[in-house]
Length: 344
Ligand SMILES: NC(=O)c1ccc[n+]([C@@H]2O[C@H](COP(=O)([O-])OP(=O)(O)OC[C@H]3O[C@@H](n4cnc5c(N)ncnc54)[C@H](OP(=O)(O)O)[C@@H]3O)[C@@H](O)[C@H]2O)c1
Image 1 (cartoon, helix red, strand yellow):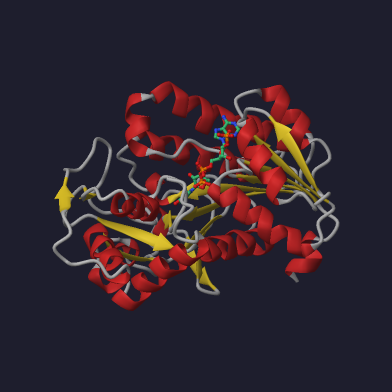
Image 2 (cartoon, protein in one colour):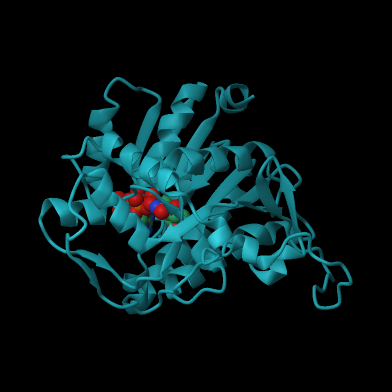
């Protein structure tokens, strides 16, 4: 099914040099696409990717900025599908550099949406995050706007039935650039204390393979305006730090420093809003939030949601990963990155 769906397709991946973008690329190459366009700004990252895939002539590298309407427009011409994965993603940065996040995450998404509409691209997948749920930081707010930009098409009276825009929402992907796993590993190899913001802070975690499965499922099964979510498991950041030491065979006395919650950070995350719950159904282990229909008012709704909010809350111990599961994530991360060659 997957293979035939992507066969002979021309695909654009914005942010194709990023942690998620490269995983999408890697997976889709196995499904016989005609062409995959990698769109991003940094020449060196594209150079590295060219080197990695030097035998692959189906990849086209395009330098450009999602903020630039013309470059997004040109990159989109003739594609069958877009994975919109470019974004600025670091919460503390977003609190300081508001304008940069608005330009990349909101204006960039607008440009992708406009280009998709102009070229009648049949399918656009927008990669979102759990930070959009009751956002406490500008990063989450900008990504929440991104979700709205893409789901808005389903509400338009003159929408094209040939096109669909789908949001995919998930929490932390283990081992991605600048995320918890590489930071802890780097702190250990450089003999620095492991820094944890707050002993009780929890986060959702999934592997990159699980994230890609979710993205591909949404691509195949998602309908216009829907947001597809995977109910993920969570743990405390402290538990990840403890088990990292255990997996690496380091004494429990290794210093762990609590640095305090940073601006814009929440103690716990959630995958879904209360309002979403009224429009959520489960299918094949995924949760599908359908878009609003006009005139719909959740406040007036007499329906009761099928699911409870706490099922989607990272602070709920019922949602916690077991130590074995966390250790498996850590071991997979260490194996994939060959321990020495780590980018943080
Ligand atoms: N990693 C996670 O744990 C996680 C969890 C949930 C959701 N997500 C979402 O997944 C997406 C990808 O995340 P990631 O972890 O792969 O991030 P990443 O590794 O930082 O990659 C971001 C990508 O976006 C590109 N980019 C940034 N600004 C751009 C611009 N103005 N124009 C064009 N390209 C731009 C970057 O390349 P250049 O710098 O070369 O432009 C890079 O290719 C984001 O939307 C993020 O919110 C990630």
